[in-house]
Length: 259
Image (cartoon, rainbow, N blue to C red; front, side):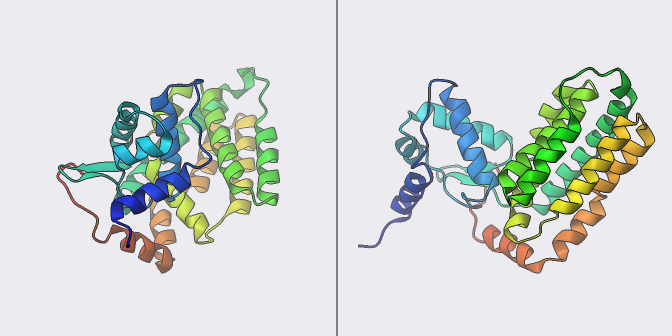
């Protein structure tokens, strides 16, 4: 007998959550949100994938209430959208949303780099930015791109803390879902720039350590690049664009689509 779409979904969830165990260390909502966020960002849950509350709760061995609340958070982040009388679906990858997120990050990162350089001489911390870069270099050498990404985020978060605006990093991160998803897709399609990233990070840190705000800003702009460069990178790799286009085909539409 052929499997129905629903049974196929449940089997997918069962496979994805096979090694997942919810604990009492954090709320069910937070844990389920983190799990689904990671699965969507890494495209293990593809655009257009139906996310049934019932099937998710059964696969996670959790009640439907925290699953529903986690899905609401994901909808607010633009990672899922609701079609009335149909269900909740993973949103398509949207280039326009990606470019907007890149714009937000560029502006805030420029500000944090300048302020970090201005404050660096008076900043007291046991955390060494160069130590983070060294660990990132080790992760790159080991082809451990998950750890490379975590350390990348840690470095940029540290710059915001040095700037004295650590809370802004939390706000920024909530706008970057599409950036993270396309970053993962780039890696999947072998569009990796690890060595270039390492070189850029060292230059940014050197400028901040030398308390040179203008140079820190220039280094950050060079690292993140203008929006035009992001568009050029995507259009230069038709395989990636083809994947995005294919995943957007026949996705259920609704007036409640996330932007």
